[in-house]
Amino acid sequence: MIKTDEFSSKIAVLRPAMIKFARMQLRDDSLSEDMVQEALSVAVGKQGQYREDASLSTWVMSILKNKIIDYYRSHRELVSLDDSEQAIRIDSCYQAGFDESGHWHEASSPVEWQGNPTEDNLERREFFQTLQTCLGDLPENTARIFYLREIMGMEVDEICRDFDITPNNCYAILHRARNGLRDCLQHNWFGAA
Image: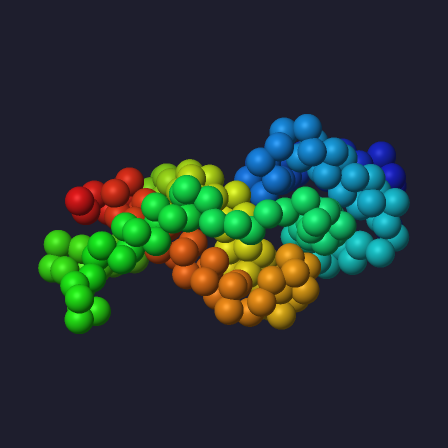
């Protein structure tokens, strides 16, 4: 077993990545700092439960993810899922891409997004920075629900319970998020007009 001081030093190196992750989820610097500090404290306190054959980074990040999920569960009454101006804009931009018969307008049809299998890490990193920016441009709760479902892998039923919404509402929010991300990525990454 690793000594506590050595263990604390190893997890302290993960702090910047944890802060970045928490800020993206919480959109509040102070709350992000608190969540990361709590997660680090839990990790040190549960050091004996860490299996050295597992990735320390994955283990500590999963503690942080659970802290963030617990925060949203305990504060769900503060979350408003009313349509915001941004959500309405995303819906109207999406609807404008179709004609009366429900077919894509040629100018609005999706551009084929093909990645080059030999792309270097810099391009991949730039893409994910753009994706993170696009997530930040979505309405807060739309981005939060998308992230919980698509990145953290929460089931729709669990999201519905935590946010006190119906499955249909959840799917509508996810649909808006995907359309908003598609639009943002086409304009900011793929260069389509």
